[in-house]
Image: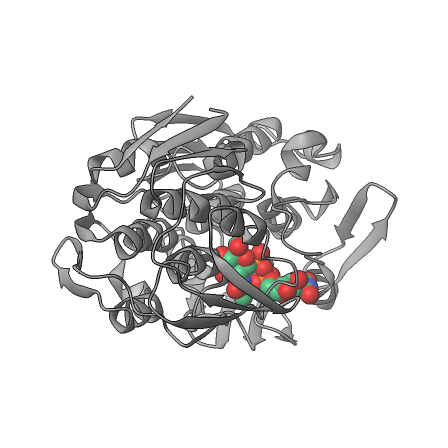
Length: 421
Ligand code: UD1
């Protein structure tokens, strides 16, 4: 799919099932390498990032295939010879989560080579915290122009204090810690729900991990891990995306399997904007009957703060809200790619500095030709298009496909006139 066409200005009405979480499933897939056995990952979203991880795992000898929405991963016979070769090519470079493979490969084989990971174009995304932490387990690194060779004569449990609650680094340390001999303690750990998902999977596979979801995680490492079954929770960012579409365009939606307990800060903002919402047994009901009111100040923070992944989506809502919103991005240094496109659609935005913008809501946006430059920014342009008059065309949809299984199908269920070509 190259472009998405949206005929905007129509209130939303309907219900949709929320796909499994991308950010939860990718580290879980990396963790399957540590299990000598067969795993079933239920409710696995079919996304380009997942396909990419599938290729990586296949390359090192995992038997892996989809069976409906289950992803079956048999990691019994992963092959050291293949692993000590290079995990090369686009697959690694195009997906940042491949950094998580480092901890998993070191855990299973004591060595790995990874080309430098990539991801969205949202800032520098260094990996110094990952490397600092892995060194403490007894890992040695040799870097060359293209990547990192990591090896160890044996992983030993350790205490790691993180200078920042990095999600990726916490995941890597957990993966290394379950394989290391003895006890590992992480202080200053990330508390994101995706960390809890990874630890739940590992516990089901036989690991002993305590405290995930808090800033102190303890691991009793070195236990053998077996294959298991794990169900991926609904994606809190996808649910938030469809909620934002409802906030911006108005209407009533039911988001089946939305993980509402993980969405507290988003729901708080939605309520301030004038939405009514209710948690039901199997999802989230959202109703928006008027034009949204601006939330005066939103600042992205590590969980349980306002998620950086929702920043551009709420910017799109702020663009049509009554009043002004000051949006501050504190996690990434370069995450305002959509501003010129929102302005092209008629939004009034003042750039205060590289991480802060003020949006003055306008009565209505005008459909236009715009381009996705990264995943969530792309989804935010779709939200803007849903609220706008006339037709919006969003180009660059390969970024959106990294995180949304089928955004056009889902939004059509909610009454949006949208299709991809
Ligand atoms: C981040 C988000 C996560 C989101 C994901 C995808 C946070 C805290 N993390 O996770 O919620 O789902 O992006 O958009 O909101 N950093 C370093 N050195 C490192 C690692 C990270 O300086 O070794 C910095 C990064 O440059 C960034 C910040 O720490 O400024 C957050 O990084 P991290 O949480 O690791 O990023 P992701 O795991 O990609």
